Image 1 (spheres, rainbow, N blue to C red):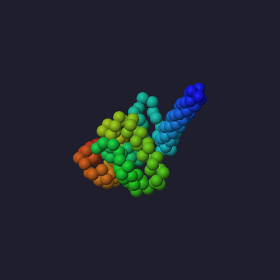
Image 2: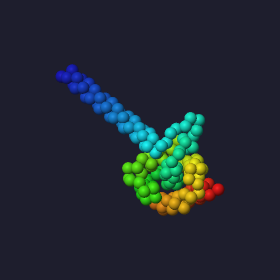
Image 3: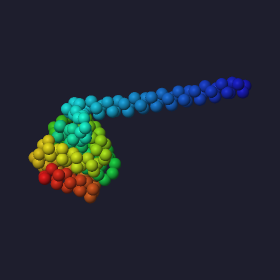
Image 4: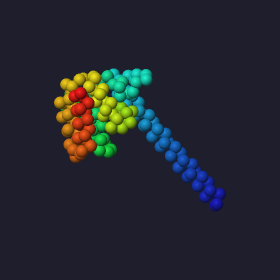
Length: 173
């Protein structure tokens, strides 16, 4: 009888370890798929990584820079909420006249660029300068409306208003 109990215990332990290893493998595959999705989305928007150039300065599509700025405004008061993310999605769909799938891809690339910049504050400076180079000051009215709409979802806090003011100063100068 003790041998039977030990045998069942060993089989149970092996089954648990097998299940955990299988779950870890699936999670790793999902992470790789997510990274691949961001890479493919960036390619669809014409993003090409240039050697010895910061990823934020490699952006050639002003929509990526603008989306990154909107996400940085939303993140300026802390973590990005689902409501703020939805506001970003709706604003870029409205202004850029794009489908929901394309908006999701822009958001994925924008979030990646913010991560490469080291957070929302460094991204604000870098992406605003890049947007000024790509599109000039003509984008400022639309960008301010979009930024205000995103900030309103987050409670229109002081950090978001400061981020919008910083973008306005950078693009206007």
